[in-house]
Length: 318
Image (tube, rainbow, N blue to C red; front, side, top):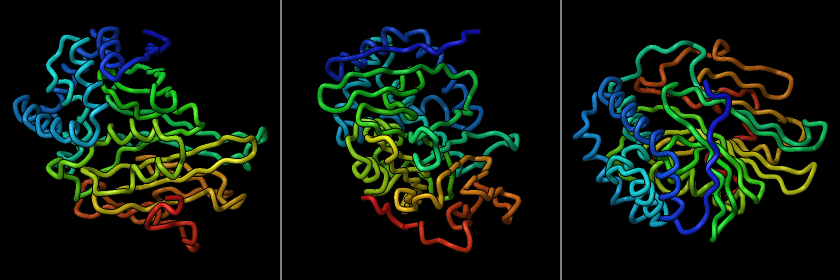
């Protein structure tokens, strides 16, 4: 068992970055395609043909909304020797799978299953640093790696991704901006909305210079599927900002910890739904249980009582 994930140092044009990614992670990409197409069928009832047809629709979207992302995907396909629609399916696997989870439901999973993310403001840390971190509880078979990208037009980025996926979903950039994510499901999730995909948004967030721009990438326009984003940025010791945006296809809710000072120094989110805020800990046992794949999925932000003054229906920083 390997103790370290591969780190790919990449630079150049979008196509060159993608080509090197594809070439150097060729076995891992081939493996991930086999895993995902198998699980598309077994877990989400999507045949290879249906997955590819939906990927083709999304390729048209990506070509339009993010030509650089599209060109990087094409580089990955060329470098790995795979078809562009297969690589596209890998890059929109969030939409393909989560919209099906919404439609047909999730299979039973352990109570401890799910990614957990946290952010701690500098006011709560002895050395004055903003701290962000998470685990990634997903399919154990999937091959992950780190991308260390030097961009010509934007900040340099260090991110975790799945081999073949252009958009790193967890990471930080040279402007001191960090990104954490949690997958969530609501009854409104639908791939057929054909909006900017989840991984493209993550890629754009990590290329942002400011927290405001990163927040707008999440909040502006509609989305295909629901997701939670924790964004943070620090440029000076002792000063940092954190916002948590829980997004659904047609709405977002935002916890803006940049304005709360000492009062709410720690925020954690996870699919197992445990939150630590200040000196009190909330768990799902404090509230009525709900099914995230049912007709209604309540927002966790609505559960913080009695004071909701730090919650905004749109990101205040935008």
